[in-house]
Length: 253
Image: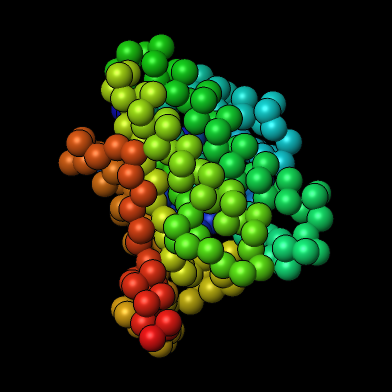
């Protein structure tokens, strides 16, 4: 039986590229979407195109905890779960801290942090029960590590997910489950409005590498962390940002 990976929000961007890359690496893939069912079906077509099985479910993480039951549904349909990638998230809203409503705050925290907690818990319980270990990869952001004015809810959710990653790694290590995070910088995805643009054609003078990243470049890193090549890595957050965080000291000078 093939190993199984579940990738949340795999209907576009980083999630879609991650699902495709994991399928190419030999995984059957559980695919979730919130609104873009057509995008999810595109992902399924790509997964099946390399000879792997796929299943699609709608996942609305603004309505926890029941929504996380989709993880169990996908695991049942595919015969287990070996890898979970918590990619679902929202970058909205951005606005001044003094003006941010509690409802907007809760929407971001619910999707980015509560959702990852609940999905990880469901997947980890199955991994523990199966007794064969597993891998969980949380997609955070450079703003897990550095603040951004006007994004208090987003930064709080990603910072919280970074520390949750570390606690999960400590508690789940005895069960052979590795937990890591990938913290992307500026990536050409629907969230940034540049998903149809080749990032090598976009000039970014504020980045050492001079361009935004492609979702495939994040997907490749996720596949590495899911593989045995990363067998001694757990509890870490890997910044993949084209050197963005290196520029903080340069700007201050």
